[in-house]
Length: 329
Ligand code: ADP
Ligand code: MG
Figure 1 (cartoon, rainbow, N blue to C red):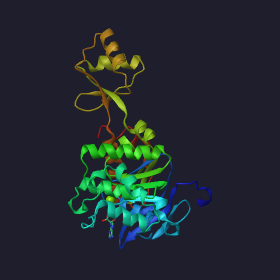
Figure 2 (cartoon, rainbow, N blue to C red):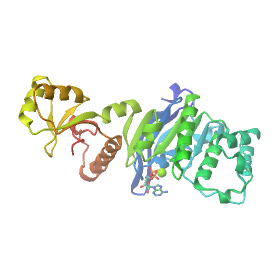
Figure 3 (cartoon, rainbow, N blue to C red):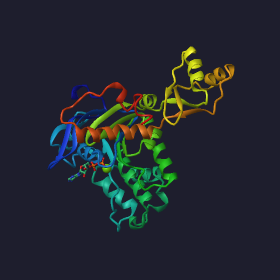
């Protein structure tokens, strides 16, 4: 598959990492493309950081392969000009200033000195550039890490849980930065354990659970499948309403606690039908199923699958997390 790569691609093929008995990353195959933000979503311990470390050659695969534009990380000439990364928050070499930290990084990677000022400006650390990083807050540390990732003006950027420890203003800033980097045609690969965070940032979504690939889909598609709208109804005249709806070709299903549910956004239509036929309604409320719920269901099933089944078994469509079954459980 490497022959067909275009610039800025990360490609994983059967990527696997075992630590003793533990399979941290299990046979992952997917590609990360330029020009969009790709979200890498999974609960804590799913294998996101391990995968990202393997992209950078900091950890070696037990099996499979990961390449950047067809090459292993250690085959890249001046790797910081290909891919910049922010890995998990680390302690900073306290004695150095932000400026000197970046200058060392630039000098040891053949990057012009002027880039140091540019990236400090980009991440908003210019005013504290000469201060020792020892006194930096977590948020400032994250900004400095991002400055380091941007230093080589790379085509690919990879961020591991970048919003951890940031205040709302910092989170907002990082989201916009990622979007603007993608809009410049760069490849942006960002991990998070929060669906809500991904929904606001990512154009494409790769979901893993227990090291396995669970979804590789556009964000729009994931939302369309998962955040279904429906209408909840309560009425003391259940049979009459069911009749009226049935005649109008609308299917209502029993949803527990004496409520009925109708898929789609048909609240107005249902209200008008009820009024026309004199049906009393105690509730008529449009609802939206949450993406967070869909994500939890998706990953919970991967846990269950590992715990209970010896042989892989196809799940019936209605039990897929994006099907009908999960919402009412
Ligand atoms: P995530 O970043 O999605 O939270 P990680 O990649 O950090 O997940 O971890 C995946 C799994 O691999 C976890 O169960 C973790 O405990 C295990 N793991 C990660 N690094 C090591 C290591 N160096 N030695 C042993 N187990 C590890
Ligand atoms: Mg991690």
